[in-house]
Amino acid sequence: MTVKARFAPSPTGFLHVGNARTAIITWLFTRSQNGHFLLRIDDTDRERSKDEYEQAIIDGLTWLGLDWDEKANQKDRMARYTEIIEKLKVDGRLYACYETPEELGLKRKTQLSRGIPPTYDRAGLSLSKDDIAKYEAEGRKPHWRFKLNHAPIEWNDLVRGSVAFKGEDLSDPVVLREDGTPLYHLCSVIDDIDFEITHVVRGEDHVSNTATHVQMFEAISGKAPDFAHLSLISDAEGGKLSKRLGSLSVKDIQEQDGLEAMSVVSLMARLGTSDPIESFTNIQSLVDSFDFSKFSRSTPKFDPDELIRLNAKILHETSFDTVKERLAAMGLNEMDESFWNAVRPNLEKLEDIKNWWDMTNESLATVIEDEDKDFIAQAATLLPDAPWDETTWKAWVDKIKEGTDRKGKNLFMPLRKALTGMEHGPELNNLLPLLGPEKTKKRLAA
Ligand code: GLU
Image (cartoon, rainbow, N blue to C red; front, side, top):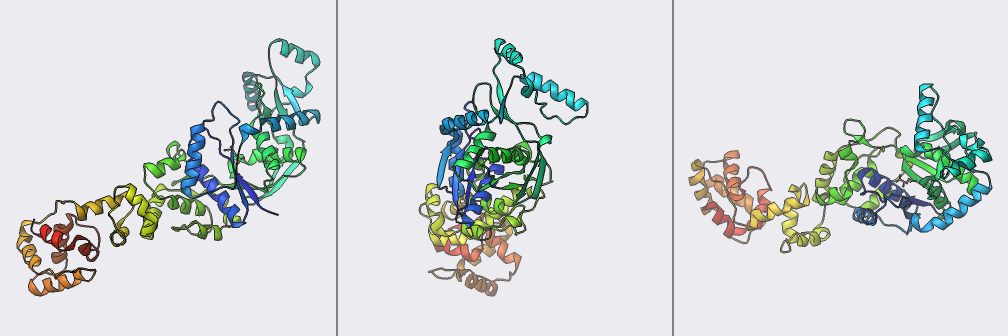
């Protein structure tokens, strides 16, 4: 049987880290099974759904390196939802209710104050013809609920193991609004059936929805797919993701923070699993090691600093070929492979490379302290002849040690400051050939 899974975002906002994690994990699972990946846009809510969000989600997924075999929009499938809804009405699985939101709120409050679980009391089921006529005469329109069987609901979750609910503990979910638009629950189930989804992967905030969905699957097609409910990520202290972190969008990570897509993928693929969090430059290794049995039920902590650490490691392993178009787009089209290789171990974010480029190419404010002036002047006379390579630095230092009375930090630091203007930075054996004799002499004479 071919595995088919889907990622089903609602285009009511940007792709944020939590959703991106679901997308990455669903995608890795599907690819690890040589399966089929569906991108389903849950846009039944026409007021809140926006084309630009759909596009942003597509851009975000593409940037992350995820692809899909098929894409569907719920808004294009309304006729199909209506067909199933009418059938379920005939089967007696949907029933009309006339409460206003205020009336429902009041019922809830009363139940809570009496210590009763706030499930819907099924008043809609016992309405007489007269009651209905009265409501209709008032201009009320019904919303429709799915009638749950009061029976055990069980499934074996790929992450949570055995999960059990009782039908009687759950409210009959509303599946059709007053205005005739179908709601997420039923649409999602109909799609999962029609697109032959074998595995539904989503956040654990959907677990009790799933219990109701299981009965909808049974009512429509007789069989529910497999489920994997991922623990929701928390902040570094273990609390619920703050508004700022929770809504941290993939677009911001890309555009404002300037991070590499693979740092997000590397982190999100491994967070909350028994595998170590490591930097990957290639998504295939993550596909190969994917297994739901490695996922824990406990809440994984999301620490944005970890993204930065992974980002640095990934850049240190990134080849010039992979990055050269992006460098050109940054206006660094004259940069070559040897420059990239020399400088990349110092990068935390790609944009840092601009500083290195400027350090070697622009006129730079370097530092020569008064007490080092004579030493620097003397060191300049000892520079080896061109051509320069990675061994030049050592050859130069050997000559300086012979020709002056300096050694250790006393020798290196004045040279570093004279050449780079900074106390920390690239290995000087790498920097020297990048600078070349002309610029080096100029800086030492400054
Ligand atoms: N659109 C729903 C959401 O974003 C999809 C949930 C599901 O995977 O069924 O929460």
